[in-house]
Image 1 (cartoon, helix red, strand yellow):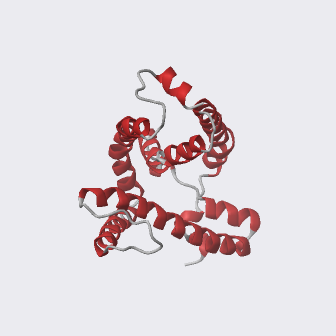
Image 2 (cartoon, one colour; image 1 turned 180 degrees about the horizontal axis):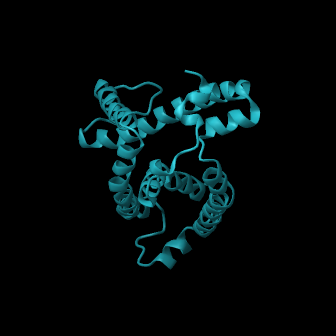
Image 3 (tube, rainbow, N blue to C red; image 1 turned 90 degrees about the horizontal axis):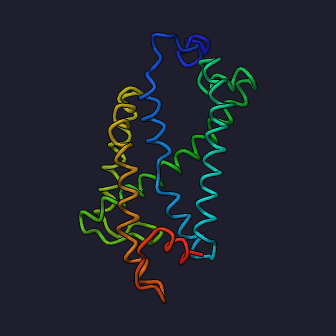
Amino acid sequence: MSSSDEFETQPISPNKLQPARAFAGSYAGEHVAGTEFVIGALFVSWGVGAGDILVGLLLGNLLAVLTWGLLTAPIATETRLTLYAYLEKIAGKGTIKLYSVVNGILFSVLAGAMITVSASAVRILLDIPPQVDWFPSDFRFVLVALFVGAVVVFMAVKGFKKLAAFAEVCAPWMILMFIIGALFLLPALIESTPGITSISSFSEFLYYCK
């Protein structure tokens, strides 16, 4: 079968389009993450005010949404092609081969990192010590990582519809979990910060984070 006959090189037909909730679920499942909490905490520890971080996050996410809405979405809805097919039409097969290799390496590293993060959360339930070395020091953590990776791969193999349905269920409570996690860690943050005994309001929290 030639590349011109492959499904991904053809515009998506109307009967294959998915409802808005599928997009919302898959988009939220991919982009709702705790990275902001980690990076934000590092910035605070380096002396940046919490207010600056919140403003930066608001502006950054606003620019990201505008980019998707004004640039990416119009191109996607006009062509109905995958990124790979559209890039091949613009830049040729040589470029798409190089892009595929580089993108494959990057996504392999990214997937490994995300699976490790997920396994790190699961290991708490199994009383596995934190893995802070270059290589795992507990074989049980390796098993947990393999299990989490197997679940991720299984959902990916099932296709977009199953993955979107899974994301529709998981994405809403992911946001709630991050909020609860931040509130749960607040007492530990207060205890480890000299001169602070309690925080009773959000404005007080911002004041101490300056």
